[in-house]
Image (tube, rainbow, N blue to C red; front, side):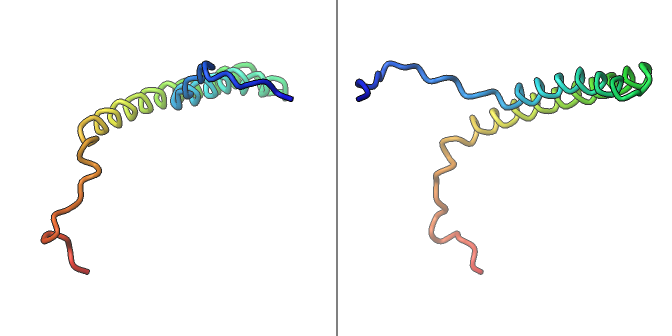
Length: 94
């Protein structure tokens, strides 16, 4: 028979969406060249692939962070008004 549950357990913080994507992208920047060399691609080709992936990852990181900042700014600006209804006389007629 299980004992009483403890209500004092702290909940883990929600994962950072952009951070998770960037971590996986960085992992692929390391993994892809290793696999390419393993299967016989030249070292120069593998380094080129790694540099290309790193460049794409850097650009994606910048865009993701910018998107998060814009979304947070938009949420702050439109938060309290989002639940308001339109005035009755001003609704569009279909």
